[in-house]
Amino acid sequence: MTTLTQPVSRRPALSTPRLRVVLLCDIQDGAQQRFLEAYEQLRHQVAAVPGHVSDQLCQSIEDPAQWLITSEWESARPFLAWVDSEAHREMVRPLHGCVRDTRSLRFSIMRETAGSETFDGPAPVTDGTVRHALTFTVKPGSERTVAGILAGYASPTARVDERTRLCRTSLFMRGNRVVRSVEVAGDLAAALRHVARQPEVRAVEEAINPYLEEARDLTDAESARSFFIRAALPAVHHVAAPGMPSAGVTRHALSYPVRPGCGAAVAALLARQDRLAAEDRASPLVAGTVFQREDTVVRVVDLTAAPESVPGPALGVVGPRAAGVLSRLVDLGGHDLRVGAELGRFLDECRMSLVTDRRASDS
Image (tube, rainbow, N blue to C red; front, side, top):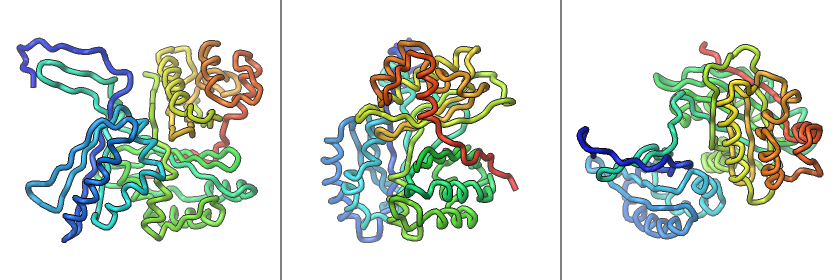
């Protein structure tokens, strides 16, 4: 650590922070050796994953059954692409028979001190809200039925525990794709477990099961785990304009027709555009969150104007240069995004229908 009297050398802020992943493992009695053998095989496979930097295996000095696996990644994107893949599920399968319980924590590296040098990442998110989304598809022809089921449930209580509270759930559909965005103050994992236990939520999930394109059984732990891994749509960027009004603000979602392999580039472009919009007091953008997994990109925005009246900010592209970049990354269907009318038509193709938008009840 540096002392207060030492000069601190700073490198320029990183545009994309590195990611630290912490996996807490509670090993079953008598399974320590099998766990070590499984990890020994796993670590060489993980080392070959693009974006992986390093990992460590640690054992508690107080409880030998408690183990800690930490890994560092170049950024969140390569890790999330890997952890949501079928290859990851097959890779970690040998650990399942050794581990009683696990908990995964993910952190952006915001500042690092080595000797007398301090390395800074971008400014941390400080509003205390964790954002996450789930996405899945339903059988074509069932969209109206599913929308009615999803719109009709009773909101669960907001308070999860002393430090965690549900804030908001927004649910959208476009075609047969469903996107559920959640905002949580506190521990996201605790909030999701809390919601899953609520009888009103369980009833809704059971009701839509027959209409899902990919079958699931939420009463089976492995089936439920596999579904939520496939459905996870992590937030990769969030921005909010300072001092913007809450009255007259409406929420919208857009699903982008990303060209194969361009998901990360689309998410990065939208993040830059939203960051610039948040700094412009004349912009109608109050807040924007970009969710991305591989080539699935969804953006949830809060606007002070109707999207059709401000198609550029609504889509996350302001000016011909940004429109030209986005044009190369998405399937335009013949649209020229540099033309105002075409921008509006592309907005209509991306815009999702709002099913429900609720702030959880405290009761």
